[in-house]
Length: 116
Picture 1 (spheres, rainbow, N blue to C red):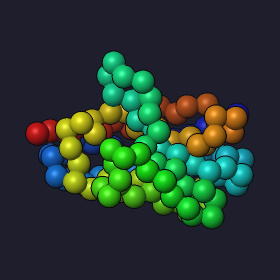
Picture 2 (cartoon, helix red, strand yellow):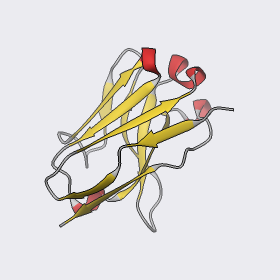
Picture 3 (tube, one colour):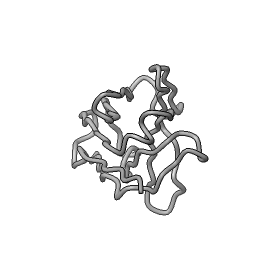
Picture 4 (cartoon, rainbow, N blue to C red):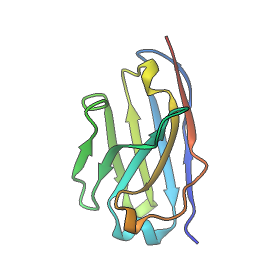
């Protein structure tokens, strides 16, 4: 069973930065484009950033220019550098395979709270 563990969340003031990390089993990281997702209270989970195995990235318009996704395949780790954080970035952040057909079970997520 694939397990994903997210970390690095916290409470930060608007304009601040956080770096999230996600580690998981080799099966996902060796074959998949990975993504960071977030879910705010009362809202659906949304995909905010993706990265292919070769390093091509993609971002939701809401985070473009502020978030940077990266991965270290040797460490089975995906990162999300979040700069210029806004209160609307407050959510529970998860990682998983970008393609629904490749996804493993969702982890516990890591909470990001941005105060104004």
